[in-house]
Amino acid sequence: MFITSTGDMRQFLLTARNNSELKTDLNRLVNELTSGKVADITSHLGSRQSSLAGFDRTLEMLGRYEQANSETGNMLATMQTVLGGIEARREAASGALMLTNPSSNLPQIENASQIAKSSFIDTIHSLNTRHNDRAVFGGNDVDSNPMAAPEVILDALRATLAGATTEADVKNAITTWFDTPGGGFDMVAYQGDNTGVMSRMVDFNQNVQIDVRADDVAIKDTLKALALGAFAGDQTLAFSNETRRSLQRQAGEDLLGVASSLTHLQAQLGFTEARVEDSAVRVSAQQSAVGIARNELVAADPFDTATRLQSIQIQLETQYTLTARLSRLSLVEYLR
Image (spheres, rainbow, N blue to C red):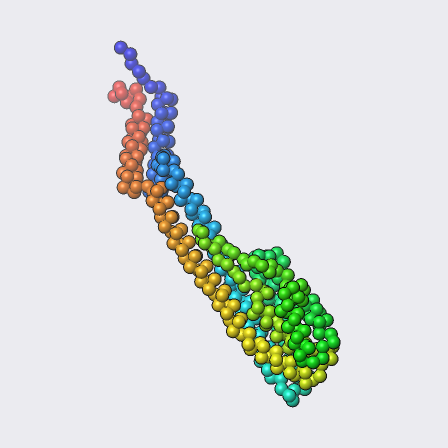
């Protein structure tokens, strides 16, 4: 008859290993119960791991669309701010120029022209506004400033007006410079993309077109009227005071006339903003739906987890009890 016995050291190592395994299982079950997710996803899913990978890819794409929507929305808000500033300057310059009347003296004419010139310069600067270091009014050309420096544009216009003396000469020269395809405005002033528009992907298979550029007719007409009002008081040009007054009144009326076009431009951007906001709502809803489906896939059954946790606790308590009893065994205790 063979008697198998276990030495004290081996018994200690076996007990220590069992304790370690039980504690590991206990900690894992506690984490699953508190987090609601299984610790070993691979074992839990088995052949369904491809579904989890699909959910993760979808969430990653939705996260990119969420970021794109946020950046696009901020860019559109920046553009709206610029257009609002142009509208405010148009209104102020128009009001100043329309005050010119047959009795206006030269200082009053110069003052109104200075307001128009400042509005022109500030408008050019605002059209070169950048968002995240990208030009926003230059179409697909986001690297270059859409507009040349205002001083360069004014100098080119002043050269065009050299020799003009009558009101008709001045208006014709400025209109030709701005409106002729491939003329002064296209060659000197506008430096952006003149064929394309910005396109931003905001959702699966959906993008928005941002088609407001610095060479838009409404903006060109605003600049044209501001330039007319500015040069009407330019003392380097040989205009009579009567011609100056008439030019300023015309510039003021032109600025009034362009108001509706600028409003339409703002409405275009507003429509695009609404589309981006709608897309952001859809993306957020999709993120929630996919996130819930993913969580359900890796969720731990709370009842099953609690049952196994209780079982491990009982095993661990039993292990501690047996260890305590074994530690008290000795020959003296046996012989008593």
